[in-house]
Image 1 (cartoon, rainbow, N blue to C red):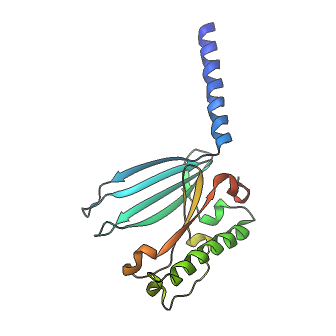
Image 2: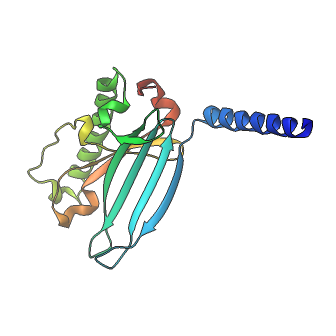
Image 3: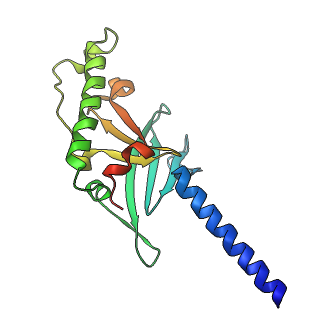
Length: 179
């Protein structure tokens, strides 16, 4: 009986150590898998990441040329352990507008770079940058960062420059997140 108690205590301490290490390193846990495409061709790519009480799922759908378009979902863990889908704004605290301003500034810089590049400027002819709202951003976690993905709404011929991604280290964005 004493050996069993010592073993349980040791396992409990190990569990606390692993939890503490995960919190100290401030990392998201991600898995990637492929799913068969019912239309044939390239597989659907699915990445699921857990970060604290949040989960992101990004699904990449290929077109006939093997180019991928992504759909992003954000979930929050409930007290019973299940996850419910939430709006992007719910991930952030009252400083979310400050963060959104920073994100839009970075997106606008990428937009301007594409619009002024000799090889891509034709795609942006007649297009003007419009700031994005939080719920227009595709959000996903990576091991040590959070990504904000956008599409500029360009034609399929301009798919290679039809958007950008703004990333932040998880440590740097912590002050903007809801706990």
